Image 1: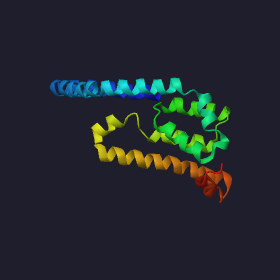
Image 2: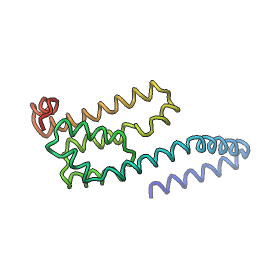
Image 3: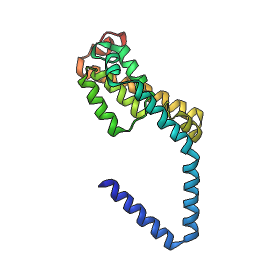
Image 4: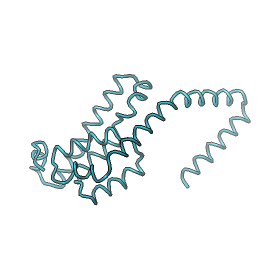
Length: 172
């Protein structure tokens, strides 16, 4: 419903713009189409790569690698898996719930979901093209470190004060 409201507002705005100035509206639509068609090939590659990754890494395999007893290694693997996976949030959270049901650890899922939402290894080429290499690398490295910090904070909150040291030391 909320999305439909935004589409309706966009349509109303487009009609109002067209009524106000046909030439500027046509020019804006042409620029928008040019920008969209410019990134379309990379976007298709991103979707294809994500589909292949998800086809070969089933939830069962991921759950074995990032189970509750996998400790820091599992957190690291989960954050790396999240970094190279591109799926929308409305798929990521049910997938996280499924992984938890299959034995994945909460810390590992925290790192996985936060890396999934913030790190863009698959989208890096597009990000680099848009923002530049230094900004893209810096943003992705900081986002990956933050995904590990999410797991550390979860460990501290769920496991007590000494748990952060245990996580860093690899003891699950």
